[in-house]
Length: 273
Image 1: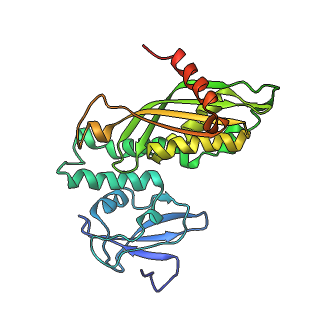
Image 2: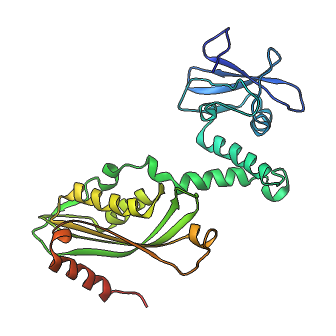
Image 3: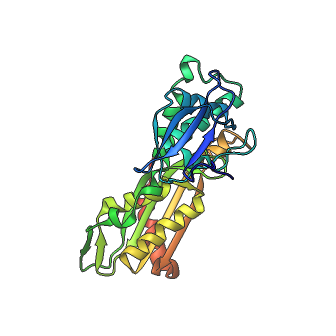
């Protein structure tokens, strides 16, 4: 990794673009990057980055990292996320992927697809930027009850971390209060935060249960998740209609068989269909 010898906050980046111009990428005082034309030196970055930059050579690209990184070998951009905002970086990468699978990213139907996909992916993974503390906020209430509370059939949409394809289903959450209850909608919000990340179903189930246990300190928590995985439907064994069940329990709902049976009985009472 190298930087331009004239300044520690400058790099030169260029490639096989039609204009033959190089690009000077320079950090400024407001933690963004400015891209300018320059003829001083020639380095290499992927063609789709050049097309992005050259479409507006003086654009500012938001970044949370003021450092600048450039590649020393054609075809290899080192830490390219440092150069662009998440939206811009994802869109540029998708443009390259479209090219690699044999598509023309400049045709009408695909022209705006990279930006659309970038926006969608950031929504699918918005759980990384959300806080449990902010979601729970002041929605914990003192109530003198120790009876089982269940919220069932909460829709879940998540992304398999192995293939980056969706898995969807229903999550059922129960807990036995220990003098405190949580606003019912917050149970769904907690599940949503963890679902909107790259996940495996087993971990997602455990994280929801562990978080409710930590936030409320109830007598026990039970979480059951049932999902269909597109990685089994669209590829691989290609089996439709398969459903995966996982559960995670704490406290008396884990250790007391009678309490477990009551939880599953109440789930069955509201069973769909």
